[in-house]
Image (cartoon, rainbow, N blue to C red):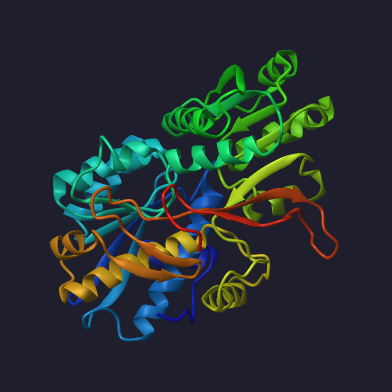
Length: 393
């Protein structure tokens, strides 16, 4: 499925929110934060979502039916999101749910999907629980998970020739599970490394002075973390004047190496940081990525495109391919066909594991550095780390 057009910004959201489903349409409920702390993630993922929807519709839709998106603002609120998911299913008649950023929101929406018998494809939320103890027949994920990400962080830390580390996480499902994933990975890659401190920051906190002091006082050589978006930016901006990044190397998940963060920080991005991203506008692993990134750049009006559109795009690819393969656009048909399904995303082949319902999604990692000709820090070198047990692409 080629990429041709996308609605952007407020126009896209207004169109999605006001869309009125009609007979003969495959209706998708998209649940993303449109306002508040997670808005840059939600609007970014929706760019890729709409890109895929527009392309599929231009090619005739799925089984002769057009795709229609109805979007709801989750505001990173689990209760609000669960209510919105139920309304999308029972009132608006969507056949599939996609989206979410917060792991807590994803777990809440997943329970609604289970009760209502409608497939939910999580695009950004990473808590491993979604595809382990909370896994069910209607939940699927295209993002990586906290076990994979923790394993990658530990692998990178093991190459730094250090002996001590501190772990800093947001105090909710993603942070807790990522910390566990890092600890598991360290036992495999660097069993001799000592964890000197495990620090937690309340989700939504704006003041990091206390944990900065604790890290510097602990004397650790590496800090592992999953701070994301504005949480990473606030921490980095507050820690840099204290010289924290002269003292430690930060290995940080949460896509803090993507342009959603590097673009906002520019020259304020700290040194000695290794970080990750799902996709990089300046790094082309395949011809499919070149086409995807060029089309996205044309539609959003900037060459420096974000990394979350690829996840929104991939989720639509999966649901459309499942319906097409089943020859039926019903919720049951999509849910029953997704397990074991393979699609070809802009960044490589992706298969939805038949048992776990987890796609084999890896990430790009690298040390972030300034580079001539770029307005923001870039990875140098760029390293693709596949999920555990998967061969390199």
